[in-house]
Image (cartoon, rainbow, N blue to C red; front, side):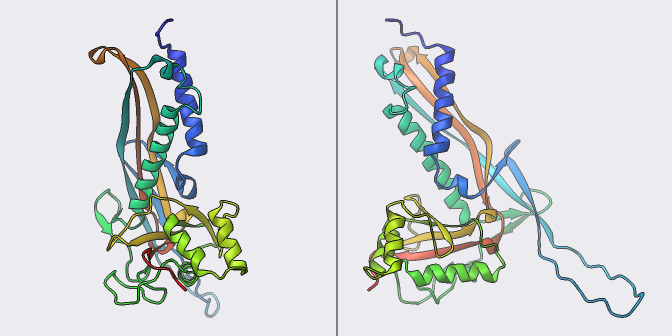
Length: 305
């Protein structure tokens, strides 16, 4: 049987991967603003809030005031994956969505996209007319729930450690509302271990318990004003048991794409003509507005009672 790999086969495999990636890949890309990028850096224009002043008297002079305006920058970086397949029957079934190599590439691309977005949630952001002219740190004073729902600090507070609780989620919602963040399109990215703690905290038989159980099972997406996204890409911070979850508005984060995933299938003569499956993408992420992202630390080593 011929082992020739046609351009049509390669194109079809790439198209299938891209389609499946949209359906099964990243969990977070669809929850943030997406930007198409030309080059390595991209910018988003931001306009701050304005206040109206009363008109005093008749035929008075018009007073002017500046409208807050700034430019937020994001940077993309290339990522790739390459694998050698020495069994031709596996190559011929790559177009099958159930093929393990196809599934692995889709899952890997999705995880990397989510890693990039998660890292940008609290990373230093770049602001100014030119890229790199000013840096903006995440607001750990006002937008970080550290050990408990009442303590907001720079990560060195002495509050009693707690898991993810209903109180913390309500507090995060309060912070966003106090910042005049729209109630639509609010999300919370939560690690599965933190979701288990939240389920343990709610009383069995209560409406909250049933809601959290439905969230875990994927039967319910929204609770307490947030669309829940359960993801293992949430990482431990401060210590191995403290996981940082994120409550945010869609407009608070951006995901930049300089190059959508592209795919190649080639025969490698230096590898006994094994088939190389290669994928590459160029992506980045940045925090757009400090007031629209809240970090929620949770201790997964304990359970609320």
